[in-house]
Structures are given as structure tokens and as C-alpha cells.
Image (cartoon, rainbow, N blue to C red; front, side):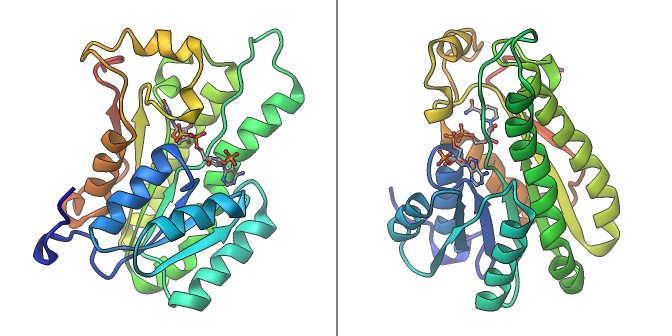
Length: 250
Ligand code: NAP
């Protein structure tokens, strides 16, 4: 793919933290942002996958081992970024987990694992980056919600849909707090995107119902994230953008 000419780079000189950047949507966002001039901090619970992404992306890039569900890990990770770069311009709260349960079978452990990663992790990472963004009077936070937040979930359990609906509320709440500080906070609600997370017959069958004829690609989400991260979206905050091929329309 031809690289973006320097004058067209939308994220030149920005430092962007992408959680879950080792695969799937996070990796596509890291590639897209890098292509547009950002310095990427690739955060992952598994240090090997963080390093894989960092070494794949050319130029300055930081691999960060960080468990978003742990406040200690998130605070330490944020400190390492500020220590190395002195600032953080963009946070993409992308890391997430999905397990399959029914209402009847969803155990307390299932609930805690999914909600503590998806919802608490988004809260912890956002809280950690706020002071530096507030000080610089600028910043962008992008949260990965899901179509499940709107449908209540079709093939996934109540824990996943609830965690993603919570991310919508969190996005709107933080957008209000952060706007006077020059920080924009938005969300993306993907439908079904072909990644390791959706490598499951139930989700492939759901993806077959997409009105535009195919499951989403990770790059479809990355393009939306680039738009939200860039000055093209300078007047947009507190918005959740559906990227779902028409699978749910509201
Ligand atoms: P994925 O392929 O499963 O990738 C998620 C990444 O997050 C993995 O590399 C995973 O690492 C990492 N991760 C998990 N728990 C973590 C933690 N506690 N701390 C740090 N990293 C952690 O998922 P995806 O499909 O790319 O999804 C990305 C985001 O989009 C998720 O929030 C997901 O809920 C959302 N989304 C996806 C779809 C879809 O159709 N794919 C639809 C709607 C919303 P390990 O693999 O090592 O655990």
C-alpha cells in the first residue's frame, strides 16, 4: 500500500496509546495511526504480542505490557509513557474480551472477567490519561463499544452487552467533563468484524446477515478511529458512531 504523503498525515507528531494493539481491530488502528504519522504505544496484556506490533510498525514505537483491568498496571503504564514521551495525545480504549454464556449460565466469574476488562478497563485507562491531557488542554479518547450495547446482545451473553452499554454511558459522561478542557471523547460501535474475537460459528452466522453483504474488516473500524482522532472531527464529542454494515440502524 502506498504510504500517505507527509502533508496528508493527519496525526503527525501525536502520541497515541492503543490498548489491545496486538491483533484484530487494535492492530489495524495502530497501523492506520502509524501510517498517519503518530507515534504508537502498543499496549497488551501479553508482552510478546505488544512487542510483535511494535516491531512490525516502523519508526518510533513503544511496546507496553499493561493489563487494563488492573489499576496498578494502568497507572504504571501511563507513567512509563509520560516518562518516555512527556505527553499523550490520543487514547484508544480498544482492548476487550468476549466469552459466550446465556443468562442462566453466566457465572459471577464470567461477569467479573468481562465487565472488569471491558468497562472497568476503559474507565481506568481514561482516568489515568486525564491529568496529562487536562494539562495540555487537548486530547482525544476513543472507546470501543459494540452493536451489542444497542441490541442487548444477540449471540453473546448479558455480561458483554452490559459492559459495552456501560461504555456508551461512560463516553457521554466523560465527554461532558472533558470538553471544557479541550478533550474530545467519542465511541465506535462495530457490528461484526472479522478478528480472532469473532472466529466463532455463531458470530460468522450473525455476520452473514449484514445488509451490506459482508462482515466488517478491522480496517473499517480503523478508518473511523482515524477520523475521530484527527482534526477532521474537531467539533465532534460525545458521539457513538455505528460501523456495522447496516446490521442495526437507529
Ligand atoms: P480481539 O481480536 O480479541 O483482540 C483484543 C485484544 O485485547 C487481544 O490482543 C487481547 O489480548 C487484548 N486484551 C484482552 N484483555 C486485555 C487486558 N486486560 N489488558 C490488555 N489487553 C487485553 O478483539 P477485536 O475483535 O479486535 O475487538 C477489539 C475491540 O472491539 C473489543 O473491545 C471488542 O469488544 C470490540 N468489538 C469487536 C467486534 C468484532 O466484531 N470483532 C464487534 C464489536 C465490538 P489476548 O488475546 O492476549 O487476551
